[in-house]
Image 1 (cartoon, rainbow, N blue to C red):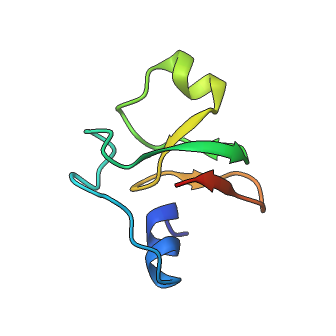
Image 2: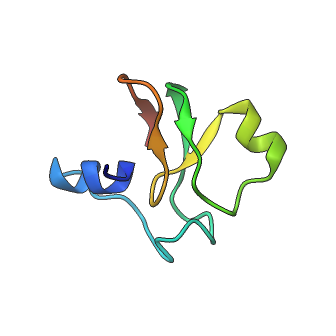
Length: 70
């Protein structure tokens, strides 16, 4: 199971990463369509529940379709 960042990189899309562990928020992107599997420690409980943003360095998608504003 790959992180969103790993999938993006394997498809030629580069994103901004710093810690790559979900600690700093550098890679946060707006979620347009999907249900994220949040695996970061940066977002708080309310932010995670809203599913409006996800950290692509370590998170995954719970749905087969993933649309991000990056």
